[in-house]
Length: 260
Picture 1 (cartoon, rainbow, N blue to C red):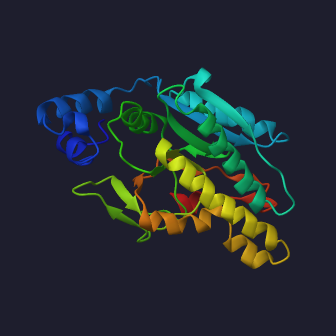
Picture 2: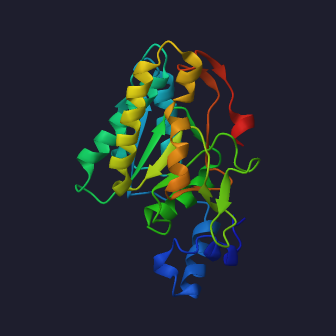
């Protein structure tokens, strides 16, 4: 069964599909073929960096399985050694900054779309996630600064998004937490990195004030950027944060009720 009607398939991405903007029929034929085919398509232009602690081999294995299930090529996957700190929030910031620095070194070498994910990401539906990512892979969804794969709380339940044109599934992000997963425009890497470096400095000065410290987590401070820049998300979300033990919160968490 198709995830989108043929007409929706075209209008959902109005303004984000330069190839088919002038050729409606060709665009409809493309989406008809893509959305009705259950075969997982290999994605050759998406490069994934995943953050993983050395002592979380369980997550190291599970996230590789997730990526394989949505068509990411093995040679386009890079593990980033996540930083482990006492409070966790600064370690999260440092890990994402490391991933952004790695992307800066890769820029210009290949024409990749860069995705950064945490090792507890779980795709909601492999086939649907593959089709959405295929559109990014082929440049059919483009022009954004950031494309979030997940959101906390679930934007379907709260007013933290705004529809793009006639879109039923592509939305502007207004206030989404969780750095579970995102695709970043190469031209936006420097801005986000510099923004988070300032956050990291603040986190270093707030180590003994836990409540304020949590409010300075990077998935909270980046909401300021969401309001001023071009951040988008596909709804329903294509990924969530898997349940399990959190090395930041130091307890077992289940985010599914909040994120789906």
